[in-house]
Image (cartoon, rainbow, N blue to C red; front, top):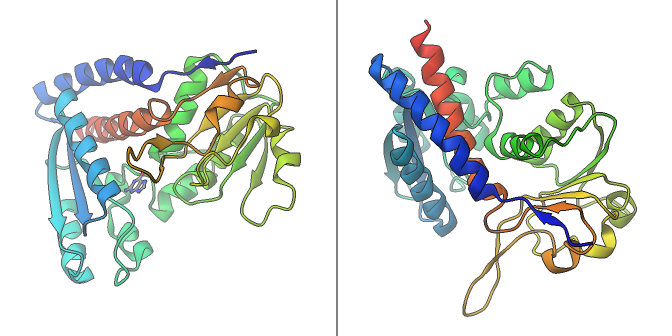
Amino acid sequence: MTAKILDGNALSAKLRESLRQRAAELAAQGFQPGLAVILVGENPASQVYVRNKIKACEAVGVYSEKYEFAADISPEEVLGMIAALNADPAIHGILVQLPLPPQFDEDEVLEAVSPEKDVDGFHAENVGLLAQGNPRFISCTPYGVMEMLSAEGISLRGKEAVVVGRSNIVGKPMTLLLIGASATVTVCHSQTKDLAFHTRRADVLVAAVGKPKMITGDMIKPGAVVIDVGINRLRGPDGKLCGDVDFESAKEVASLITPVPGGVGPMTITMLLANTIESADRASAK
Ligand code: GUN
């Protein structure tokens, strides 16, 4: 069997077209959606992500502001910036790109963002609402994964889902969403004793560990749906991107698989736009 490839670029393009229309309607009512992005330091991957987020905003008619700070900035200055953005009616979403330099307490910064503008879904209040099954903002990558599964008409009810990775950004919210969709969910991580035992049971396998090509074809149940959240840059002259899944061997076993690049990645940014537009929509209804 060769798996069908889930094209995140194509689905994103379709979703972004309807987001562009909704943003234009809101703008016509005086509520052009606005996103502020804060980037601290010179992490090259973060710089690329932020550039892509800003570009995506422009393409769908979301107003954006980018605030760049040197790596040695004091946390107080960034917290002051966040407080100003919390109070700015032109801004409906605030995103602090992670990771932050070591002098920062990341939790303190994430908690400083108004939960009503927390389009990343990282604020404890929004994580709590998601855990209760009543989400306000869903973090963008797991939200994008759910949209991809839904667009393919994949029902999760009663399915065995295995999430590899337990991060706050992906693994944990992904787990909550899969439970909410009535899957039976197993979460694996670096201390899991026999990873392949678990992954081979998965009808739906989500890899979010950050280890290049760690999940190989022999670890996948025939016919499984394989979602690769990893974005790893391989060493070497061409510095190619690859996922946490060994695509070549996995595609011979899975029924559906997301590629890297061009799978989950574009969906993450699309859901950031969706959350920002949703936030502006809520502001317009107040
Ligand atoms: N760093 C890696 N992924 C993300 C993300 O989704 N949002 C933010 N803010 N930072 C990140």
